[in-house]
Image (tube, rainbow, N blue to C red; front, side, top):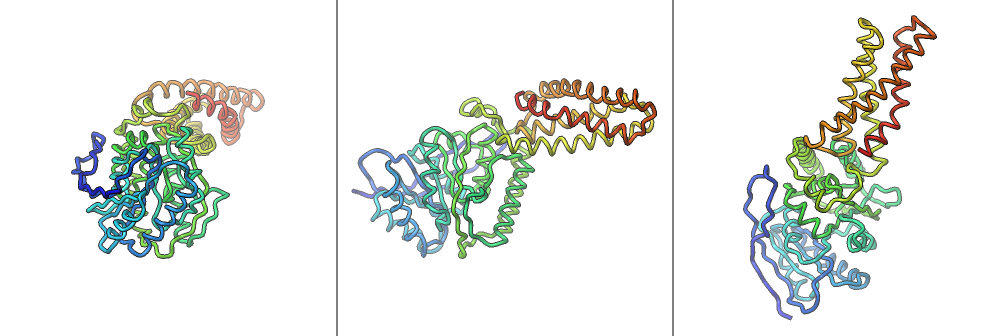
Length: 416
């Protein structure tokens, strides 16, 4: 077998209209020329200055795939501008292991490396894992099998499932859980662990999403997952056993700040409708509702409902001191309904942009009519029993009637 060495630009990935134009990074690709079918799975291992650990980790991954994966595969070492002998170690691995390829980039960035390799790969299933192999390799087949069968579009390892076994320090544990809570609160995501370095994606899905992903560093895969969920793609989660690498050189604080900036950028783009998620949704999306599993939607719906109910009651209590109870309730409920529909549309169900907004507000007002009828009936019944009922008691009755309408409201909004 001969060794192929090619220096070529990263395959051009056309970005979204608002993204700045970038010049493709040149890459050097080295692999053995092998007869036979193309790989079904391409596992990328991004590295930076890993000359000490690279060989042992790749050999261990290679042995695992050789013994457990029944289809052709490739392991691609993606060198992010290392300053030590990492690239030479990668070349040595290519020489002795035919299933190993190596790619060298002149610029750092895990996202940049994944984009370069995934965009050029001929495998239908693309994956990546950290070079320290912190994740137990027994989870690799459960990770990629749903993609190969067509059941799912992306797959992620999760360290936050109740059956996962995780060993790591307090700072990393706290930072990881806090970050994922922020993603749920700020972007309304349904997946549980955005940062685990153990993910896979179907190549056709990657071709749709990569042009929209701007980040070239650690936020890359979070951004990919957020966009995938907004496009109604199915994300499969695999509980993993995970051991923290004590020699990890990731700047936890700096990475967290970069992630927060990335969250703000993506949230702004989704809010303004600048990302063509609906077009991708129509081409490759699933019929499942956007915004995560039902449980996550219920939690977000409840939070929105609690907030807008407090707004409704506060407005009613203020207005009822100067205006009759019925018009006070009507005006307060109308304002709260408009706010509730907008918040549920964007946060609970993951819809953005102007498309369908007026229709959803009209549907929200229809629910408003039913809710108002219930609250008005409650106030009328209270007035018949206690003609001079105090404002706190009137407020309590209005609140009880509003809660009674909430279950039907969730079912209708989710269907719409």
